[in-house]
Amino acid sequence: MSHNYHIFTLPNGLRVVCLRSDSQVTYTGMAVNAGSRDELPDRQGLAHFVEHTIFKGTRTRRSYQIANRMEAVGGELNAYTSKEETLIYTNAPAGYTERAFELIADLISNSVFPQVEIDREREVVIEEIHSYLDSPADAVFDEFDENIYAGSGLAHNILGSPESVRALTGADCRSFIDRWYTPGNMVLYCVDPSSAERIERLALKHFGNLHFDTAPHSRELPPEVAPFDIVRPGDNHQANTIVGARVFGRNDPRRFALFLLNNYLGGPCMNSRLNQELRDRRGLVYTVDSNVSLLSDAGVMLVYFGCDPTNVARCRRLIDRELDRLAQSPLPVRTFEAAKRQYCGQLTVSTDHRESRAMSLGKSMLYYGEVHDADYTREHIMAVTTEQLREVAELLTAQHRCSLSLR
Image 1 (cartoon, one colour):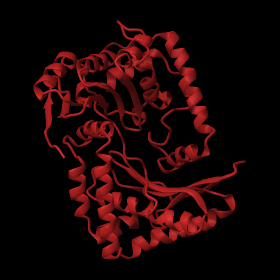
Image 2: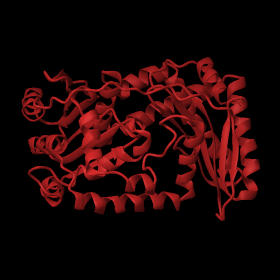
Image 3: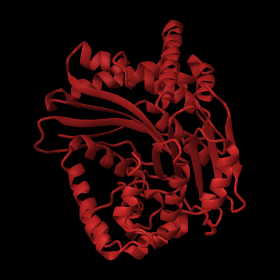
Image 4: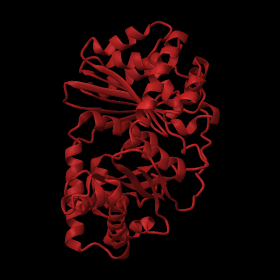
């Protein structure tokens, strides 16, 4: 893997990370340290609404011109929002780096949020909200967060509610950008065949005039909640259930042991422990997986499964048994070493997805101030011990465990 990352900071405080590649495609984007957690209580859904409406007009471009700017050359312009981050990103054939930089800079500096576009996109977002409400497999995650992060800005879902979205205005959108889309709160990333010197010139040309003041984050640690076991009745053919617990934030050194535990327990491969126990050996589920979501100061690890309502209790017993076993005694050495080899192999394969790799550069700089690439992660995974894995499994034992089921 190449390590020729070039990292620099513009005079206005904007951090930039670039990687020279031999690809015929350029990947570039702006990572912003702001998401749904940073909204005011009466403006839920604003971060996501900004993500939608920032493409709807600037001082010099209408929405169709923005959409056409990258697509006309075969590229793409897109964005996403999470609880703590927003990414605006492009991909395009190599040679259009300046076009991408200029467009992203225009969106951040000059978006005007025309009222007619705001009203139209408001209905689009409300339909998006309804589509999630119509999908219990998605809704169960939002409801789990509402309970495990109760009393904090992490509790509400990213989209907001139809009522909160109807209340949002173009002035709200512009205010959110002015507060959070600031040089000190963003990272520009680029994976491109160009030289580092050229990227520096282009970055300074198009982003050097950003001078919004960076407001300090006022994120508060979510309060601890008592373990819960919630069942919501419904008329679904399948019960959608989550079992999980609060864990630490993304800067905790134990995260590598947690990543390894998660992958072994319910990762994306068919040989994950829970897939073997619940699906392959017993045919109780179509889907069972686990995942870890780490934020700046808190996180969750959870197991999701969907099954016939009559099988929920049995699935819960099997999951509880696996979690307790992992917490009570270390994995056998051969099993443990195989789990580490598999995880590292998956890392190698994942780096072949160039767009994801480019995004990870921006997010790594945003959160850690340096590049944590696959080699960095692989080194730390291989250093995890069986006892460290057992210790993080203790965070998921019965006294910490929460569950929510939509049936």
